Length: 176
Image (cartoon, one colour):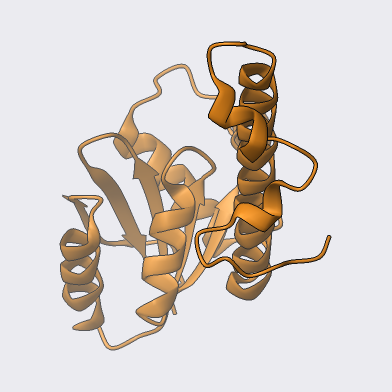
């Protein structure tokens, strides 16, 4: 088993790869996009061992997590505050952070956060989208209701009446 520590920044992903004894196997960087993560997983696959990785929680960590898990890695997202408490360092750089995360992963001490599986996340996203649409619909209804009181907009009075659903484009009667 290989253990990877991943430190994500805007333009690059620093990684530090350790073996089971803690010896450094490889250190490098990769772009944190789809192609960069694919090439990173292909690059580290040549070692022929499964990879267990840890990445600090921050913007973009879930994207990296999902992409690397699709490539067959076991990835944990670490709570950044707890990692800082476990390994307080005076000199904090991206490469050192990657090494610390790799070492925590190797020792199975990663303070991982819970991440729902993709199905639960998809359901939550659908619920958020539906809530957005309901709020938007309510906002539009309120705007139409506000225009209804304006005497210069006579046509809007008919559309915004309590029977507004009768005036649908298809002409179909709908029930509440």
